[in-house]
Image (cartoon, rainbow, N blue to C red; front, side):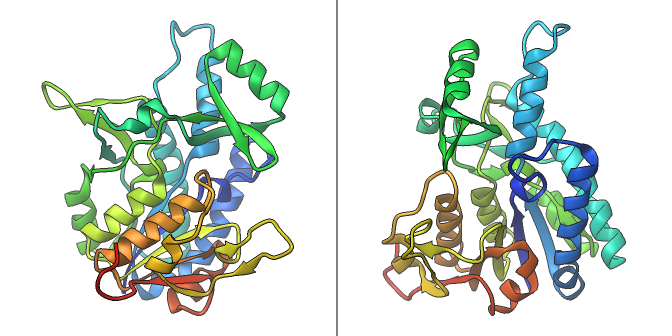
Length: 305
């Protein structure tokens, strides 16, 4: 099968962990081990999140006295793509013996996307409410609650097109595992002439669904730190959703900052011709591909939307 898998940025740097290189590389090795069985048997395109990493680089840039102004988020996104793409490509090639390539890639967004007026994408470390509100006042940030903690949020416009898609296809045809669309892709908008970077972070799950559709993938696998999508998550009534149609899944409410984009990405993929999408733990990647683990999402017949 042809598979697109999306690996969360928090899988590389868990909440509360220091952003040390060796800690993140340790997580990358674990991710590569979980994905190796999939990559040996199937064509694999891998995307990854970058929320913790891009937030860290933004903090460092803001604090650097040598800079007149901080680096913009499109540049920071490119930096994280290079770092994480290198780690993942090397670890996957070592684990599988197959060639692997990390591709710095841009995602086209619309300059008039309403998301620019409503920041919603979490980036950077977690804070208590008082610290988050103090930093917001000092630095002009937008902050929101993320579970029990608070984090910075930035605009997250809709992905329209992966600019480097032809190169992704060429690398796949050469037999390579491809790492691309990291952090949702470097956000760019149409300009005169050409393209220009914009201040945003695109959701990696929505970009993964876009890539999966464009390359004719059989499956979209969204890897996270929970066993499955759950009804009544975080309550005593919580229960996993195992096999579900997209229409039924869309009828339920999920948090916009966490599971919501994964559910939306899964539904978009199957509603546009994909065989199935799976959402679940990274450690269960092979089971997700086999349809025996996590939440399996399928199109539910004619008339869905």
